Image: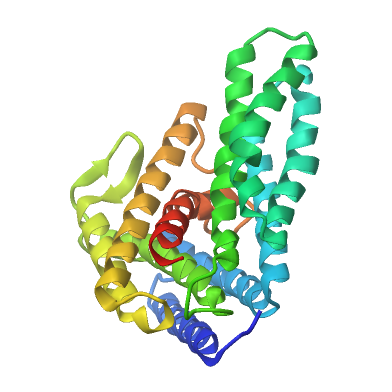
Length: 312
């Protein structure tokens, strides 16, 4: 995949933002009581984790399509592992889980690498949904069968199929935008993650009214509105790196931020149902892999299909 100057500009801008965040965090920690403040400590942990995540994502992006596909396949594997761990299954599901982890994930991402959209689009929604319940049923364990099967299928859809639409952007053939799809992937990930961060920042600064106190007590109306509007404005300002006009970039950025927000609420509902705060603890300050990509999982397929329908 061709890596052009605009990709480097975007990655450079992200690094500048991280540098500014690191400086602000360091200054806050120098204030009296700063190191003991839980909010500041959490912010510092988040910034450290962001440095690592940006470095890994940037390296994968710069290595081309293969690196991006491998990275997202690994993320899907870890995310599905967290999901299944949080929603326990039984011995009768072990064969189905083996297929999910060691057959469906590699084949799903292999189809993206091969740019075989036709089979990719039905592999999990059709064939996996038919075969996995059959395999679980033939194990002869009928206790909570419907619930167990739903857990596996739901986890596979969100953690693998939904998420894989992000690197699937690399196989879209957009007239006049050949070999530049890496910027589409970067645009999607950047807007989703900026929206999450900005909602957090606006919520800490101005947050008063809770959006969904039962699902996510820390999300506020002020944080939601401020984060969505700011991320949408940034998306519009980045139109030059996309095949979109400024107003189109704004509309798509708005759609990304809204789907990301509701994706976060859906996954929060699952965590509340299971009685936990986070899906895991792999990423310092963020929780688990799913806690970091829940918004991306729901935004990626909508963004992919809008781009595919209108621009290819």
